[in-house]
Length: 249
Image (cartoon, rainbow, N blue to C red):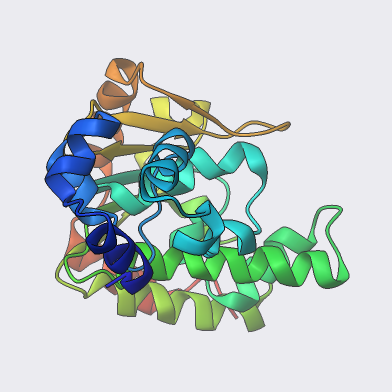
């Protein structure tokens, strides 16, 4: 539990329900703020800090330590609150499933280097913990175009594929490979992730060459998701495919 927040609430006689009413959120959302690693949206944490007479950094010190790019933080917050995540990737493996070595190779292929690269790799691994190490993790479903499995140095990819097999066997994680022989499909237009949340409409995240963006216009993405999920391999065959990895020498 976030003891600092709990104590601050007790000192002024606030409960999750009373905070929720004053801040304008669902009581379940306010209750989740007491869970370690759960950080409210910027406007909500500012309001809570003012109500409790504390600094935001005192209640949620991770805010000051976070290394995600500013434009990415709203999505990282959505990931932490999601009840389910559905991710389709066509070029690289999703950040939530990357090993440290793979993440370093991907992030290091751009302009990042030195301490900055170390910080972003650490932030990516911390994102994974915030999603998968919760007391009640979200359902996470990943559809990976087979091309994502074929790109990378074998020394990095063998441990990475072992990690995918391990993650795919968790009860709340499902990994599906979309094989090359499936042919053309609408997912080739680009990667996306759809997050479902308890008390808010679904939101999605899309990447481009400049920066990622969030959108609440998810109807078209759901149609694409239904298509790529339907032509992907079932869970057991996907795991077998990851274990076989005939394309790696």
